[in-house]
Image 1 (cartoon, rainbow, N blue to C red):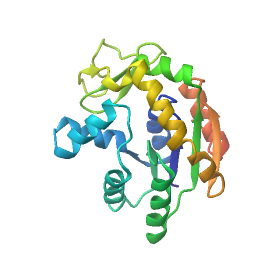
Image 2: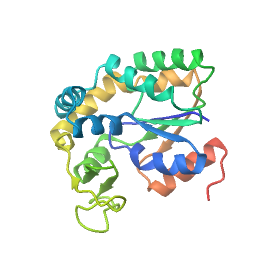
Image 3: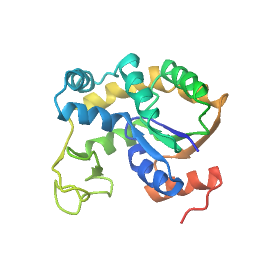
Length: 216
């Protein structure tokens, strides 16, 4: 099974993805995690990505596709994309690449949440600088120890693109460039939508129900 998670920044894709991958035995592919690794290593690519993200802009399609296709060539099991594709152009290129490999997207899952919910969530979001694990100090998913990652012990940080101003700008970009993916996938695969304002357990329960998987 190959899955794409859709939704606005802060809708809950990063929280849902690991649980879905564990249940469905999928490889989690997060372009955000790939970018963070490049940024942490201060590569030329990473510095370019950091500047774009800090301004609330999207990374150009050409840069993203190079990383995505290179990653997919190393994976033979089912996969889940979190944070990709972000544009219809990326989705079109992805479909063409998968077709050439004899693969396809089986489900596009929309986690739907309104802008005010998204802004509140992101204001409380803290991200591990080491492994990319996400916590939230406002919405009930804080780390056990303040500013310390439960998973790897890394230091948590409030990303510079997680301010309200940056988030509002990202929502404008999302509506213009990423939201059209909903219509794109309606005609090309099994598109399901769930209420992203609910708890992570409820969101995943809805997803499992709609794709015919019994949640445990």
